[in-house]
Amino acid sequence: MKHLLPLQYIDAVAKAGSIRQAAETLAITSTALNRRILAMEDELGVPIFERLPRGVRLSTAGEILVHHIRSQLSDMERVKSQIADLAGERRGHVSIACSQAMLPYFLPEQVSSYRREHSAVTFSILLRDRAAAEQSLIDMSADLALVFEPVRMLEFHNLLTVRQSVHAVMTKDHPLAGESQLRLRDCLQYPLALPTAHYGVRHLLETAVRSISGTLQPVVESDSFEFLGQHALAENILAFQIPIGLPDAKLRPELVNRPIDIRDVPPGSIYVGQLRGRALSVAAARFANQMIETFVERYDCN
Image (tube, rainbow, N blue to C red; front, side, top):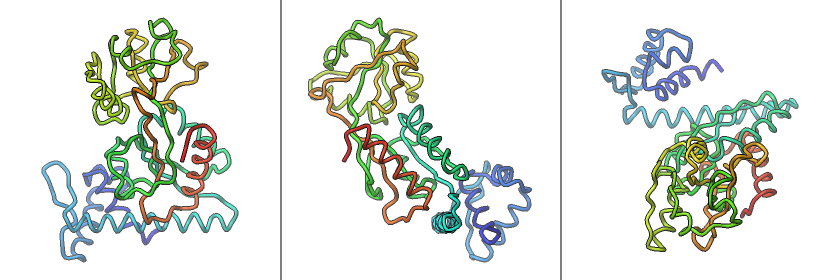
């Protein structure tokens, strides 16, 4: 809507950290965009952005303004979604911040299933680690968050908790591939490929190893679970993942996975939630309900 354009311009510059880059995204000239910002700064009587040698960043006043802008834009999306529903059309946009394990299989399946019924709904899927997912809710760059073992939950309204055990991933030729369930001490006898420290799987393993007075000494570390899984093939090494991030055996027959005994590594949890006190758009709320139904059908939830 045209009356929201100035707000969208400010939001775009805040996200890009650059007037030039935001102008390219908005398909206007950087000179015109800068004039719009200067006009709003003049109206407010304070600078919205601090001009830096390379780009811009929000001033304190700008941070307050952008929080208000995102709230307004979010409310308008919700209203548009509700009006579209009155006309029998499902429209809207759904933005999701999620842990890496949701990306390869679960969310592509869920988004495509939803869009088969409601093709006018668009999606943004944002990869966020445990600390950043809740921040994405707070700054309203995401409507929903799906995060494994989040760091804090102060502004997080939890819709569902999904229990997930830790599995070791290996080639079918690995010495441990013949076991139905693994003990952690046995895993520590082999080379390990581990996610970096800020991921939930690594946190669970580190906690478990301390309880048995052991140590984790990975030969390979990465912040990409896709790389770690692929490296399990390249070097016949042990990697780790939770069930929602594991491929179907038919898709990757060369890989096998075995659960780690929960006496050694207790299950972690995926938290599905939204910003506390925020009303979701119709599209986001119904997509959340679809995911919750799928989780409840497949996993241990509460």
